[in-house]
Length: 251
Image 1 (tube, helix red, strand yellow):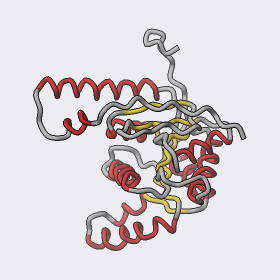
Image 2 (tube, rainbow, N blue to C red):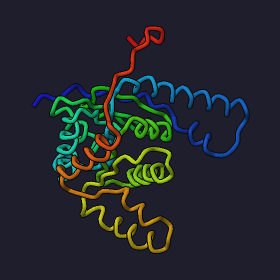
Image 3 (cartoon, rainbow, N blue to C red):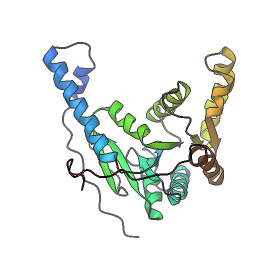
């Protein structure tokens, strides 16, 4: 099979400025410059993603190779989601992210990546129709959530855990609507679900009903049924493309 051309590597500058930014208060000029840079990054994201259409975001580890069962599960799941007309959005990297973007391309679906600039070499996976790189993790996370109607989460590490629980917190606190959060890879997730159902619920740090925010399955058909009921039907999901502005040079 012919592969799309490899995406170019982002131009990465030293992360020292980001480290300094998070080390407490600085001069007013430094903070103002940082505010301008953050605002510009949000603006770039909003403009780039304004016409992307309804998305489903796939989260998961960058460390799984092509021959791993979780890679294949993500690829198949993303292909079926893409058939429903959703854009598949990921962090744009390798592993699960590549698998999901690849699944979208397998069926002629749309595929987008929100990458992150890191001090070491990183490039987008070769299955992206379009992509955008971010300097700041928190800006990137906003983009991965803002345009999505469901979240499919494959096994992953600290970054994936951060994405799961931040998304659940946003739903729990009413900051975003109750969109589906679907964990795939039951063997991997069962110990965490058990901890949520026993320790967290029994101690009272979450409500019993909070567990209902999560679906855990290995069945792609079940995942699609949850997506249909809790994203498409519940919210009457339909997409009307925004009008492009000639004034803003949007075509």
